Image 1 (cartoon, rainbow, N blue to C red):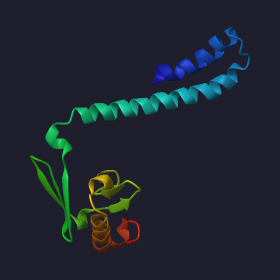
Image 2 (image 1 turned 30 degrees about the vertical axis):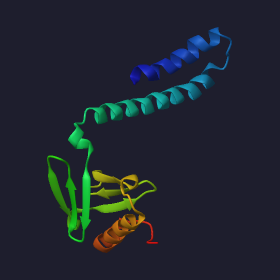
Image 3 (image 1 turned 45 degrees about the vertical axis):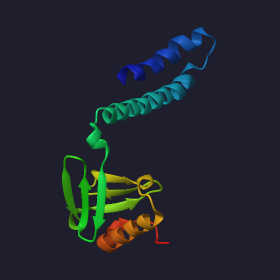
Image 4 (image 1 turned 90 degrees about the vertical axis):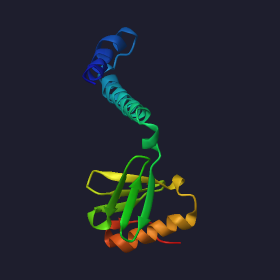
Length: 141
């Protein structure tokens, strides 16, 4: 990243004037943050892709079962039960339910994996009843 940040001033002060651009400071102000942003997003994408491809098959198939007592998380080799008392908050987004068990750690339950709308509504109801104000979900239909 440091090398990329240094490339902006080099490009702006030495290369641009040589090819006919006279406002090299303006170019640095515009190009350096833009280049940093592109590389930063690319690095995050690449790290995510590598991490996902390194998962074993059984780690990619996760099942959640929700009830009034909490929720269970299964894969082919392990199991965990999380009670609602240990859930920090639940937030519904356009594409998922994010269930936080700490301020920065959470389970993502993609809505595309919930096959029927009645199950999405049922999950909203369980979250609202079990978490009260800690559940930030859309209103029930």
